[in-house]
Length: 129
Image 1 (cartoon, rainbow, N blue to C red):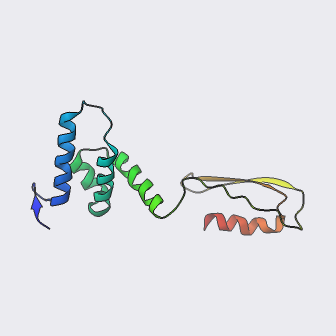
Image 2: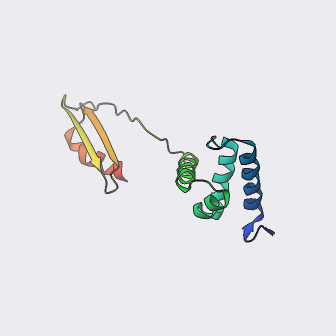
Image 3: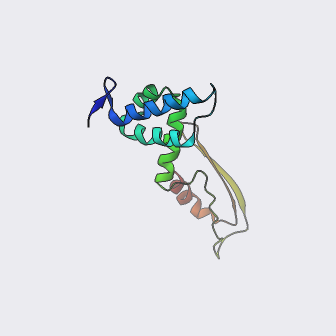
């Protein structure tokens, strides 16, 4: 891989030039195009968030959010999931709501109707694994 513009790899330097051309033709505070963001996300996977954000002069945290969204989509993980569990034949008519919170503050809330109480422990474990 040949080098250009100091210590930047060729493809990162080329994207840096695209960003500079885009900035020259757009007013300040204009949203960056999706195609430029997509290219930045792709290169950040190989060169790291900090190096890519610095070279392209974009906000580190904006790039990080886009990389995380892209990686979640690549793994096939939906942003939010609704799971409907059919009631078992021996289920009681009871109803309960459970909420879990991890150390990072992420929460999960489940509302159950007619779910057997004996299965609650197994259900709880499966949500965090």
